[in-house]
Amino acid sequence: MLRRLIPHPLLSLTLGVVWLALVNKVTPGNLILAVLFGFVVPLLTAPYWPNRPKLRNPVAMTGYVLIVLWDIIVANVEVAAIILFRGRDNIHSKWVDIPLDLTSSEAITVLAGTITMTPGTVSATLSADAGSILVHCLHTDDPAAVRDQIKSRYERRLKEIFE
Amino acid sequence: MAPVTEILISFFIVISGIFGLVGSYGLIKLRDTMQRLHAPTKATTLGVGGALIASMLYFLLVKDSFSFHELLITLFLFLTAPITANFISKAFMVNNLRPKDVPETGRDYGWAIYDDPPQLKEPEAEGKGE
Image (tube, rainbow over all chains, first blue to last red; front, side):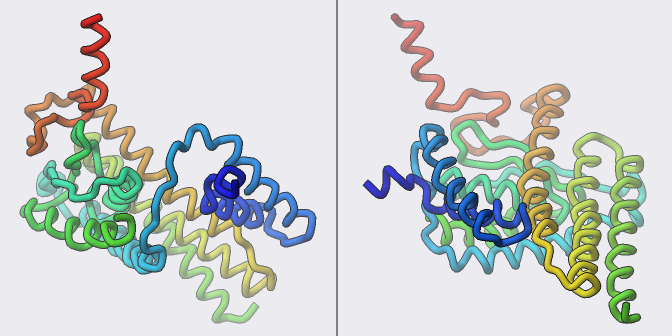
Protein backbone atom coordinates (compact mmCIF):
# COMPACT_ATOMS: atom_id res chain seq x y z
CA MET A 1 0.00 0.00 0.00
CA LEU A 2 2.72 2.43 1.02
CA ARG A 3 4.75 1.33 -1.97
CA ARG A 4 1.86 2.21 -4.29
CA LEU A 5 1.31 5.62 -2.65
CA ILE A 6 5.00 6.58 -2.64
CA PRO A 7 6.57 4.61 -5.49
CA HIS A 8 9.91 6.45 -5.38
CA PRO A 9 10.76 7.77 -1.90
CA LEU A 10 14.13 9.16 -3.05
CA LEU A 11 12.54 10.99 -5.97
CA SER A 12 9.85 12.43 -3.67
CA LEU A 13 12.50 13.69 -1.26
CA THR A 14 14.59 15.20 -4.08
CA LEU A 15 11.59 16.97 -5.61
CA GLY A 16 10.57 18.43 -2.25
CA VAL A 17 14.08 19.67 -1.45
CA VAL A 18 14.61 21.09 -4.97
CA TRP A 19 11.29 22.94 -4.76
CA LEU A 20 12.20 24.52 -1.42
CA ALA A 21 15.61 25.53 -2.81
CA LEU A 22 13.99 27.02 -5.92
CA VAL A 23 11.61 29.28 -3.98
CA ASN A 24 14.57 29.99 -1.64
CA LYS A 25 12.34 30.52 1.42
CA VAL A 26 10.94 27.97 3.89
CA THR A 27 7.40 29.10 4.73
CA PRO A 28 4.45 26.85 5.70
CA GLY A 29 2.85 27.42 2.28
CA ASN A 30 6.01 26.43 0.41
CA LEU A 31 6.42 23.40 2.66
CA ILE A 32 2.91 22.21 1.80
CA LEU A 33 3.60 22.70 -1.92
CA ALA A 34 6.89 20.80 -1.60
CA VAL A 35 5.13 17.85 0.06
CA LEU A 36 2.41 18.00 -2.61
CA PHE A 37 4.95 17.90 -5.46
CA GLY A 38 6.94 15.13 -3.79
CA PHE A 39 3.70 13.17 -3.52
CA VAL A 40 1.98 13.85 -6.86
CA VAL A 41 4.83 13.94 -9.40
CA PRO A 42 6.19 10.43 -8.63
CA LEU A 43 2.62 9.07 -8.75
CA LEU A 44 2.01 10.60 -12.19
CA THR A 45 5.38 9.60 -13.62
CA ALA A 46 5.56 6.14 -12.02
CA PRO A 47 4.65 4.35 -15.31
CA TYR A 48 7.87 5.69 -16.87
CA TRP A 49 9.98 4.39 -13.98
CA PRO A 50 9.30 0.66 -13.88
CA ASN A 51 11.86 -0.18 -11.19
CA ARG A 52 13.43 1.65 -8.29
CA PRO A 53 17.14 2.43 -8.67
CA LYS A 54 18.94 0.79 -5.76
CA LEU A 55 21.47 2.66 -3.66
CA ARG A 56 23.28 0.09 -1.61
CA ASN A 57 25.62 2.45 0.15
CA PRO A 58 24.36 6.08 0.20
CA VAL A 59 27.08 7.19 2.66
CA ALA A 60 29.85 6.21 0.22
CA MET A 61 28.13 8.49 -2.31
CA THR A 62 29.25 11.58 -0.33
CA GLY A 63 32.88 10.49 -0.52
CA TYR A 64 32.51 9.86 -4.23
CA VAL A 65 31.02 13.33 -4.84
CA LEU A 66 33.92 14.96 -2.95
CA ILE A 67 36.53 13.02 -4.95
CA VAL A 68 34.83 13.95 -8.23
CA LEU A 69 34.58 17.63 -7.23
CA TRP A 70 38.30 17.69 -6.45
CA ASP A 71 39.07 15.95 -9.77
CA ILE A 72 36.94 18.48 -11.66
CA ILE A 73 39.07 21.33 -10.27
CA VAL A 74 42.27 19.47 -11.23
CA ALA A 75 40.76 18.69 -14.65
CA ASN A 76 40.03 22.35 -15.29
CA VAL A 77 43.61 23.37 -14.56
CA GLU A 78 45.04 20.48 -16.61
CA VAL A 79 42.85 21.17 -19.64
CA ALA A 80 43.55 24.90 -19.39
CA ALA A 81 47.31 24.16 -19.32
CA ILE A 82 47.02 21.88 -22.38
CA ILE A 83 45.04 24.54 -24.27
CA LEU A 84 47.42 27.35 -23.38
CA PHE A 85 50.88 25.79 -23.42
CA ARG A 86 50.81 22.94 -25.90
CA GLY A 87 51.33 23.45 -29.62
CA ARG A 88 48.42 22.55 -31.84
CA ASP A 89 50.31 19.53 -33.22
CA ASN A 90 51.64 18.46 -29.86
CA ILE A 91 48.26 17.39 -28.49
CA HIS A 92 47.97 13.64 -28.85
CA SER A 93 44.28 12.75 -28.70
CA LYS A 94 43.33 9.09 -28.46
CA TRP A 95 40.26 6.89 -28.29
CA VAL A 96 40.29 4.53 -25.32
CA ASP A 97 37.92 1.61 -24.83
CA ILE A 98 37.20 0.65 -21.23
CA PRO A 99 35.60 -2.70 -20.38
CA LEU A 100 32.92 -2.25 -17.69
CA ASP A 101 32.31 -4.37 -14.61
CA LEU A 102 29.23 -2.31 -13.71
CA THR A 103 25.88 -3.72 -14.76
CA SER A 104 23.24 -1.35 -13.32
CA SER A 105 22.28 1.36 -15.79
CA GLU A 106 22.27 4.08 -13.11
CA ALA A 107 25.86 3.25 -12.18
CA ILE A 108 26.97 3.32 -15.83
CA THR A 109 25.23 6.68 -16.34
CA VAL A 110 27.02 8.17 -13.33
CA LEU A 111 30.35 6.73 -14.54
CA ALA A 112 29.87 8.21 -18.04
CA GLY A 113 29.02 11.59 -16.52
CA THR A 114 32.05 11.43 -14.23
CA ILE A 115 34.37 10.57 -17.11
CA THR A 116 33.12 13.59 -19.07
CA MET A 117 33.56 15.98 -16.12
CA THR A 118 37.08 14.83 -15.12
CA PRO A 119 40.70 15.10 -16.41
CA GLY A 120 40.88 15.39 -20.19
CA THR A 121 38.35 12.69 -21.02
CA VAL A 122 34.90 12.67 -22.65
CA SER A 123 32.71 9.56 -22.76
CA ALA A 124 31.41 9.09 -26.30
CA THR A 125 29.30 5.94 -26.49
CA LEU A 126 28.64 2.51 -25.00
CA SER A 127 28.94 -0.83 -26.73
CA ALA A 128 25.56 -2.20 -27.81
CA ASP A 129 25.43 -4.65 -24.91
CA ALA A 130 26.61 -1.97 -22.41
CA GLY A 131 29.73 -4.00 -21.65
CA SER A 132 32.31 -1.34 -22.47
CA ILE A 133 32.51 2.39 -22.86
CA LEU A 134 34.32 4.46 -25.51
CA VAL A 135 36.26 7.42 -24.13
CA HIS A 136 37.98 10.24 -25.99
CA CYS A 137 41.17 11.43 -24.34
CA LEU A 138 42.36 14.99 -25.07
CA HIS A 139 46.04 14.31 -24.46
CA THR A 140 47.66 11.03 -23.48
CA ASP A 141 50.62 8.92 -24.50
CA ASP A 142 49.58 5.98 -22.35
CA PRO A 143 45.97 4.80 -22.92
CA ALA A 144 46.43 1.85 -20.51
CA ALA A 145 47.13 4.25 -17.63
CA VAL A 146 43.94 6.21 -18.38
CA ARG A 147 41.98 2.96 -18.40
CA ASP A 148 43.47 1.81 -15.09
CA GLN A 149 42.86 5.17 -13.44
CA ILE A 150 39.17 5.28 -14.43
CA LYS A 151 38.64 1.68 -13.37
CA SER A 152 40.35 1.95 -10.00
CA ARG A 153 39.37 5.50 -9.06
CA TYR A 154 35.73 5.70 -10.18
CA GLU A 155 34.36 2.35 -11.25
CA ARG A 156 35.44 0.49 -8.11
CA ARG A 157 33.76 3.10 -5.88
CA LEU A 158 30.57 3.12 -7.99
CA LYS A 159 30.42 -0.65 -7.73
CA GLU A 160 30.44 -0.33 -3.94
CA ILE A 161 27.68 2.31 -4.04
CA PHE A 162 25.27 0.78 -6.54
CA GLU A 163 25.88 -2.96 -6.67
CA MET B 1 32.14 45.61 3.11
CA ALA B 2 35.34 44.32 4.74
CA PRO B 3 38.47 44.27 2.54
CA VAL B 4 38.93 40.51 3.10
CA THR B 5 35.42 39.84 1.81
CA GLU B 6 36.03 42.03 -1.21
CA ILE B 7 39.31 40.29 -2.04
CA LEU B 8 37.76 36.83 -1.62
CA ILE B 9 34.78 37.61 -3.85
CA SER B 10 36.86 39.29 -6.55
CA PHE B 11 39.32 36.36 -6.45
CA PHE B 12 36.55 33.95 -7.44
CA ILE B 13 35.20 36.31 -10.11
CA VAL B 14 38.68 36.65 -11.65
CA ILE B 15 39.17 32.83 -11.56
CA SER B 16 35.82 32.44 -13.28
CA GLY B 17 36.75 34.97 -15.95
CA ILE B 18 40.12 33.36 -16.66
CA PHE B 19 38.68 29.87 -17.10
CA GLY B 20 35.80 31.11 -19.23
CA LEU B 21 38.31 32.87 -21.48
CA VAL B 22 40.62 29.84 -21.73
CA GLY B 23 37.64 27.61 -22.53
CA SER B 24 36.55 29.87 -25.37
CA TYR B 25 40.14 30.18 -26.64
CA GLY B 26 40.31 26.37 -26.69
CA LEU B 27 37.39 26.30 -29.10
CA ILE B 28 39.47 28.30 -31.61
CA LYS B 29 42.79 26.60 -31.02
CA LEU B 30 41.98 22.88 -30.94
CA ARG B 31 41.83 20.99 -34.22
CA ASP B 32 38.72 18.81 -34.53
CA THR B 33 35.27 18.51 -32.99
CA MET B 34 36.22 15.84 -30.46
CA GLN B 35 39.14 17.92 -29.18
CA ARG B 36 37.06 21.09 -29.08
CA LEU B 37 34.47 19.27 -26.99
CA HIS B 38 36.98 19.08 -24.12
CA ALA B 39 37.33 22.84 -23.79
CA PRO B 40 33.72 23.84 -23.04
CA THR B 41 32.88 20.77 -20.94
CA LYS B 42 35.74 21.37 -18.53
CA ALA B 43 37.37 24.76 -18.54
CA THR B 44 33.90 26.26 -18.37
CA THR B 45 32.78 24.21 -15.36
CA LEU B 46 35.20 26.12 -13.16
CA GLY B 47 34.34 29.30 -15.07
CA VAL B 48 30.69 29.04 -14.10
CA GLY B 49 31.60 27.51 -10.73
CA GLY B 50 33.76 30.49 -9.78
CA ALA B 51 30.98 32.95 -10.57
CA LEU B 52 28.52 30.86 -8.51
CA ILE B 53 30.86 30.66 -5.50
CA ALA B 54 31.43 34.42 -5.70
CA SER B 55 27.67 35.00 -5.82
CA MET B 56 27.08 32.71 -2.81
CA LEU B 57 29.81 34.46 -0.82
CA TYR B 58 28.37 37.86 -1.71
CA PHE B 59 24.89 36.98 -0.46
CA LEU B 60 26.26 35.17 2.59
CA LEU B 61 28.82 37.77 3.74
CA VAL B 62 27.40 41.05 2.43
CA LYS B 63 23.62 40.59 2.28
CA ASP B 64 23.49 38.17 5.24
CA SER B 65 21.14 35.78 3.50
CA PHE B 66 21.79 32.26 2.28
CA SER B 67 20.86 31.57 -1.34
CA PHE B 68 20.18 28.02 -2.56
CA HIS B 69 19.95 28.99 -6.22
CA GLU B 70 23.69 28.69 -6.84
CA LEU B 71 23.70 25.13 -5.48
CA LEU B 72 20.82 24.26 -7.80
CA ILE B 73 22.58 25.79 -10.82
CA THR B 74 25.66 23.69 -9.98
CA LEU B 75 23.53 20.57 -9.69
CA PHE B 76 21.70 21.16 -12.99
CA LEU B 77 24.97 22.02 -14.73
CA PHE B 78 26.57 18.76 -13.56
CA LEU B 79 23.52 16.84 -14.76
CA THR B 80 23.30 18.46 -18.20
CA ALA B 81 26.93 19.15 -19.25
CA PRO B 82 27.93 15.46 -19.69
CA ILE B 83 24.72 14.71 -21.60
CA THR B 84 25.32 17.58 -24.03
CA ALA B 85 28.92 16.44 -24.57
CA ASN B 86 27.72 12.88 -25.09
CA PHE B 87 25.16 13.89 -27.70
CA ILE B 88 27.62 16.08 -29.61
CA SER B 89 30.23 13.31 -29.68
CA LYS B 90 27.66 10.74 -30.83
CA ALA B 91 26.44 13.02 -33.62
CA PHE B 92 30.06 13.61 -34.63
CA MET B 93 30.80 9.87 -34.68
CA VAL B 94 27.75 9.04 -36.78
CA ASN B 95 28.60 11.68 -39.38
CA ASN B 96 32.39 11.53 -39.54
CA LEU B 97 33.75 8.25 -38.22
CA ARG B 98 33.50 4.65 -39.39
CA PRO B 99 33.71 1.73 -36.95
CA LYS B 100 37.31 1.09 -38.01
CA ASP B 101 38.37 4.58 -36.84
CA VAL B 102 37.73 3.75 -33.18
CA PRO B 103 39.03 0.85 -31.05
CA GLU B 104 37.17 -2.48 -30.88
CA THR B 105 34.66 -2.96 -28.07
CA GLY B 106 36.27 -6.21 -26.95
CA ARG B 107 32.72 -7.65 -26.76
CA ASP B 108 30.43 -9.61 -29.06
CA TYR B 109 28.60 -6.43 -30.03
CA GLY B 110 29.94 -3.25 -31.61
CA TRP B 111 29.54 0.33 -30.35
CA ALA B 112 25.92 1.30 -29.78
CA ILE B 113 25.84 3.93 -32.55
CA TYR B 114 26.86 1.39 -35.20
CA ASP B 115 25.27 -1.77 -33.84
CA ASP B 116 21.84 -2.70 -32.45
CA PRO B 117 21.60 -3.83 -28.83
CA PRO B 118 20.98 -7.56 -28.28
CA GLN B 119 17.44 -7.08 -26.89
CA LEU B 120 16.26 -5.14 -29.95
CA LYS B 121 17.56 -7.61 -32.51
CA GLU B 122 15.48 -10.57 -31.33
CA PRO B 123 11.89 -9.17 -31.42
CA GLU B 124 12.61 -7.69 -34.84
CA ALA B 125 13.74 -11.07 -36.17
CA GLU B 126 10.60 -12.68 -34.73
CA GLY B 127 8.40 -10.04 -36.37
CA LYS B 128 9.94 -10.77 -39.74
CA GLY B 129 9.44 -14.55 -39.23
CA GLU B 130 5.72 -14.11 -38.74
